[in-house]
Amino acid sequence: MDLISGRGLSTAGGINREQIKQLLTSSGELQQELFLQAREARGRHFGDEVKLRGVIEISNFCQKGCDYCAMRRKNSALSRFRLDAKTIIAVAKSIARAGISTIFLQSGQDPRCDQLLDEVIPAISDLGVEVLLNVGEKSLETYERFARLGARSFILKFETSDEAEYERIAHGPLQERLQCMRWIRAAGMKIGTGNIIGLPNQSIDSLVSDICLSLDFRPDFVSSAPFIPNQGTPLQDLPCGDLMLTLNTMAILRLGLPQALIPAVSALEYIHATGQLMGLMAGANVMTINFTPKYYRKHYNIYANDRFIVTFNHAMSTVRSAGLRINPKVMEKMSQAKEQAERELAEKDPAGSGAGS
Ligand code: 5AD
Image (cartoon, rainbow, N blue to C red; front, side, top):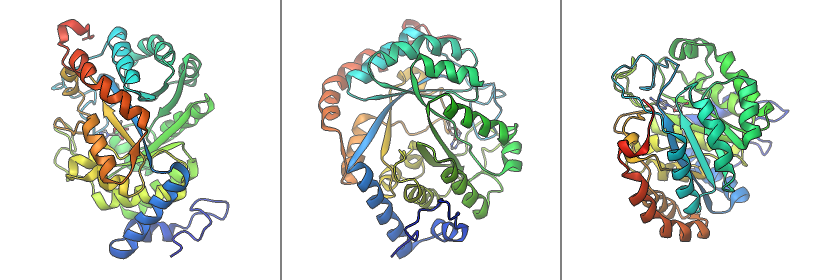
């Protein structure tokens, strides 16, 4: 069956919204065919290798007030932390020692992180790894500086392509977010973006528009994550986003952007016991292992305070179950470094780590 007429979903010929809609809402045989073709597209570009990223959550301070996120400024119940440069660099070294070649620094939109990043980006990039940031909306100059200092890539999700809905839940114009995405690219970094599935008032047509936006922007990385109701937020009583719509979106993105890195996000595992495996079966090719020192992880409740924490063992067994593999060099280094890293850093108590307030 030729799901996308062999022309790609978002070529000069234009996007076929109807076709996207049909695939997005597919189940049964058509959905299985969609997933199969997504896996084949991944296989053509990446073989059977899943890329690992190591994330360090460096600050949960945030200027923004997004209704879906517990790190929103107004959530006074959240205990805030900011790691110091020494701790971040030490954790980054342990990730690099484990053979993981992308170090992913994530934080709320925290202006006080900028100086910290100025210090840690060059130190981490000197380890010979890719520095990937997800630290929010900044000025073009700041993106350019991060790039100059050695950051190679940056993730900024547009969350929803519906301008009115974005404005309602993120309390700012979508156009500013999109401008930042263009600045990230203009600064010379690879760009990742994506949406959340299951936001209030989100129709199937709105999700089709999200897919079209992702395809048209042609990002280097793209993701789709189910919404998770988060305690202490205005959306805490909403149901979780739909797993099948998320998987279908991921598979369509794989067909439309065969060379993109697509993560099987941890939120998938939160809503379903084998959610990340299902993500890999729908065409994803990235898993992110959490290296945030244990004491701070619980305060970085990006989508839930009992969010799913991805460990190396979990990533490895998920990748194996999908019939895929992790780079053998990583496997070897990882098992050597894993125990040491967890002993030295993950249990580190707050008094010794020098975190900010
Ligand atoms: N559900 C799903 N994704 C969320 N994010 C934040 N809060 C939630 C939530 N409740 C995602 C947003 C943000 C990324 C870092 O985390 O897409 O861009």
